[in-house]
Length: 117
Length: 269
Image (cartoon, rainbow over all chains, first blue to last red):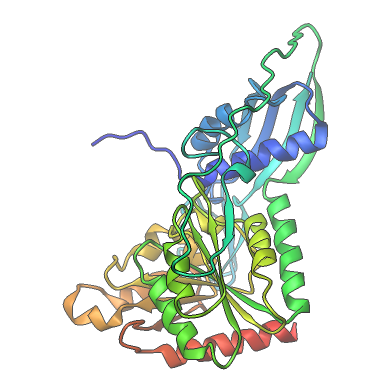
């Protein structure tokens, strides 16, 4: 059965954190756009953030704001074979079979900037 | 956000209650405040140019700050808080009942129960005679640092005590939220698929310990213990998995020993 894939409900809490953090920093003034960084290894589904944002932003200065989301790809360093490589799978394994990795990128969950009117 | 009417605000949804006894009646429903002052008449003036404000802030910064404060508050008072996470039905509450009955005489043991709704688990724990606080998250699918902070304030655990925090049964969302706990324990049972660690990698990657529960049922189910352990080690090479049966008692000594070692480590920090 084909179903539209949405993430789990933690995206709602994440979106609430985003809106709260922005309002706390810049107040209730109107916001034209919000830029986020949500890494591909972060465990957060960006489609769900967009869906939740439309709901959570109502009644704040962020209502109707454009959401720009950068999704940095994953990068890891293998401590066994001492190699850096691209990684977009949440099961984090090096080609050599090792799971002993340093994750260098892809786990970002950040508010980068907002455009205020 | 409220599951019933969609109104926002944590105070309207999360309920923290000290459950005094099994006979204590749970109020039906909760107060909904529908009179939010929504002002939909924003003046939109599209003629002005926009100005970019750099924030460069972690989305979970507020949660992580609260978690750090809780961790500090617990360490100062030599309190160990164990965050128990699993899918619904893995036997968390049964394991908890058994554990506090087995070791609760040696050390003051208290419980914070997290569920979307009902006081049922808190009442099971209360029946063992231990102090318990129920957090009902409403639509929420996980506990966060703010909820645990409120729960601890209500529970008021004494210095040197052991606090179990039973998270909402869910292998997805709790993975992302640091509560300020001393350790994170993930429970999987042999009646689930052995491939759960591969399906829910974020959760298993944050675990300090994995408990494999219901091992008394291993003869009757098709659960590949080696595969499960292998999948866990692909996520975290060094994490330990302890096989236990909360009903028959298998492996519980090793679990108690792990708790004692973890508590010692917490107190020394």
